[in-house]
Image (cartoon, rainbow, N blue to C red; front, side, top):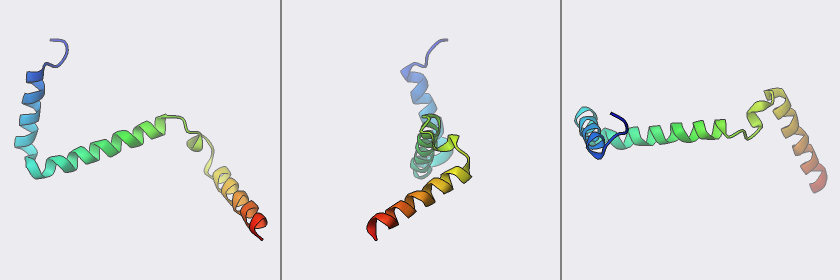
Length: 72
């Protein structure tokens, strides 16, 4: 019993349809999609979450000061 065959997937989809109904399934799909997107973003190593929050705040405030100096 290795991989899922198409019949297994059809059976799982049918059971989900019976349990949650046709109105709730799109909401569940959107929720899972957002969850996976956030997980992928968090594990991609974009560097923002590696720094402490205080350093991120300091960087943002120093960038704002530079922008004010350049504009005025």
